[in-house]
Image 1 (cartoon, helix red, strand yellow):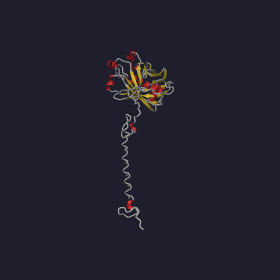
Image 2: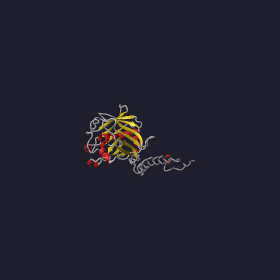
Image 3: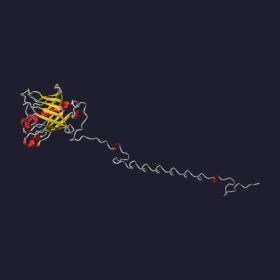
Length: 323
């Protein structure tokens, strides 16, 4: 008995069972290429690239920040503003140490001062002696004090450079902080018992004394404290003529062995030197010197100006030694 092959013949194939080719061939199933290939998925390049997103530089940056490639660089941030000292301005008032006389706080921060005398046109053209006026500056060119001579017309024109004077040294608010008192005395070396002496005061309190020593060859002064003790000495040159150069007075220690500063009469130019008595002085001293002695040194600068560099009716009175 014969049976028909199950399913019959399929197109001349082997009867019965499905042929190997009847099953889905490997190619019939979705081939690996049928699935999205790795290239079919969005490639890294398919996603928005870093350049596709707004770049750090693409967001609005605060005004003033540079945009070099994105984030502000360290140098791009605004730098803190620092107030630079401006030459010609007023020196800011520092805080002084306890017990510092009012107005002398400025001297705690300096080790040198520049004293500039104002040119008086009336005096320059007529020889009529007017009251001297000065500006005191620090090494940065900032104004520290103003000074003005307080004498009457008769005294200035009759006594000339040897005149007694009161000089008021004031701060920027016109408050008197230092007072210089020079009495009428003889400055000739022939009268050693009556040499120059000047008191330096603040608010009616004695700060120090500048006293001339007897000498034939060169100027000599003692700078003393309120108790009369010598703290510093000043020794000048034999010749005080200002001929195209500075004239230097050395500031020495109390024993005279160490130089600690100087007072310099500065050369201001031929025209100014010849036709006016407006002088410039530099004063230097140790930074840690007591403010009372600094004020006394400043006073010594004015005394030296009157004794050796102040003109009588626009005529030079410089000499050799103390003659």
